[in-house]
Length: 141
Length: 397
Image (cartoon, rainbow over all chains, first blue to last red; front, side, top):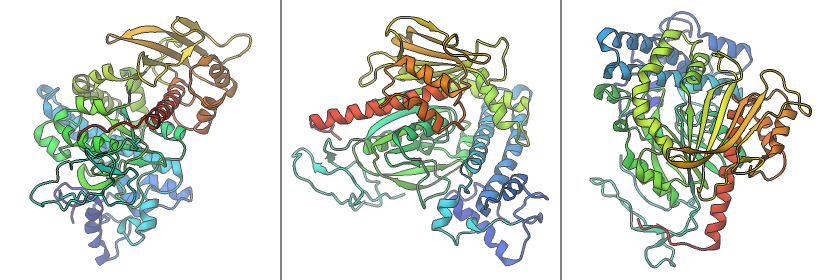
């Protein structure tokens, strides 16, 4: 299954990447809490639970972004720690690795803020115009 | 990516005339040669293009910063991402203002930067030619197809159409880096966050995330310093206005970063910009408003105002240390500040209250961001008034 946010398709937009990833989903019923759900770990993203509890509608696209960003942060911090070990501290690779961590941390924080701020899902505008997009399926527990 | 420069868009606000006749109005259609990207067409727009360009240098991401939200609020309306386009767009549009994130001019995507061993802070990762071309086009009243850098995927997405707004804000790491882009800016602001405050803010931002720890946050800031000091920090000297955020001096050994000392450094002699002052312009004032008329809770509020030199420029500095606890403290302070460019008494307080939930609403960051927003509005109105009084030939393409 294609990794959602891989950089192997440089010419595709992010939304088409998501669409490609989830078309395989349509082939069989996959419950959101199962591990096959696009390679996610077991267990539901707790941020979504909190949002659902608050009564807000969550689009699948937002849920997936949140989870993916959280995973990327973890992964990139580990990569950066490794890239900066010993002699490599201060090297190019070390600096680039921490820059990536900063980028995804900022993106995650921004997504968190957008969700918390408006009450409406950040994808609301997009989904009003594209109700059939995969990203605009309602995320259900 | 072939961009068809057909200026038939009905949304174009500015009539473009053929240079050098100046009086006829034509719309030029270009069918681009697909082998060659279209170069700038020989069309100049009349002075009715009233796009004012503001540069904002900030290391806190794009269009997400509180400053942007306060600024767009001063002009009225809420800024929102472009409707119906790429949901990961960084652009914000309100009825008068468009905020462009300069990360969209990355020449290298995340993979490319990793391969070349450059961070996003490095000028080598950014296309300054395109940045200059497009900001110039927007300033002249021409729409552009601006690339989108997707921060989630780390890829460069297909471009989005940006129509020339009344106020264009370019926000990011390098608004003042390139001399040509600098020449297009009508006003520029640099947000200078000290390392201690940066550390405290990043802890607040990142500690809740899986994967982050105090060590990782510290290491991340340390690793970022060399590139930041080499490429970003030197832009300070070009800014018309610098907002410095420092740890408070009112609480000894404070490391929470909640109470802040904020300095508004304002260049003297900038066109259309009159610095804010306290009591007596050009003098040096130290002011603690808390006393008999105003009771403040710990740690109180302390103001300073005075002339200074900043990178060989004459500046005026207005400084606030401490925080506002109550509405009447804010009103009291506003009533003693001069040259705020408010349209009515209490406008600063009203704007602060409107966004009481924004970070910085109880200290100098919110206050000075709001004041700078009002200054930018004033600058915009002065420029418009100037242009409509005396029609000017647009600069040659």
